[in-house]
Amino acid sequence: MSLLGADNLGIGYPRRRIASSISFAVESGQALAVLGPNGCGKTTLFRTLLCLMPAQEGSILIGGACINTMSPADIARQIAYVPQNAAGFFNFSVMEVVTMARAPHLGWFGAPGPRDREIAMGALSQVSMADFGDREFSELSGGERQLVMIARALASQAKCLLLDEPTASLDFGNRLMVLDTLVALKSRGVAILFTTHAPENARRVCGNDADRTLTISRHGAVTISSTAAALQPKALAALYGIHERVFAQPVA
Image (cartoon, rainbow, N blue to C red; front, side, top):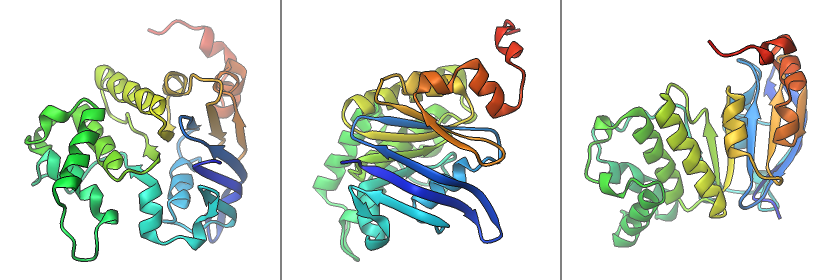
């Protein structure tokens, strides 16, 4: 059974359809990269999967159940979202930021207890940030902040992570650190869905035969295939509207 799936999903706005006929299923330990040019609908797809926008058609399934039958707290216990940019945490420590993710498991007036802090520390350990718990979030580098946000998602104990451009604005070293963390989490059974502008990011994370890459063109054409097929020069040239010969040119 898939942890997260879409069946003939249509996404967009009341007066504008962005893409349709989107069907996929992601199971434990699998990854799905979402690739496409600016404005193609990658973030809109994620917002729809998170019920932040209504689907125009089709259905979204979590653990085989239709998402429309689930409460927000139930959804948050199954799916965790990591945004492009972390904001609003500048007066908190790393441990406080991560512990906030325990909210779906607490009552209306519940406060995090020792068990919640233990889970938060375990999440930080999974991304090699256990020694940063007492640091101020605002003091961290971009890559370190992104790892903390991944730890925050893990502390929710969700089985599936959705990450919107997880390496945006990161330097080369921090980018590799975040991508390799996603690979490690996948090996531990976490399902990973992430958007990216960079084909090499899809190649690095979605390297197994069970992984897939979903592409959305500027005109809303959706293709789901093996990552190797999606990253062929001919496929990328069609996706981004460029000539195949650019892939044969050396990088300056």
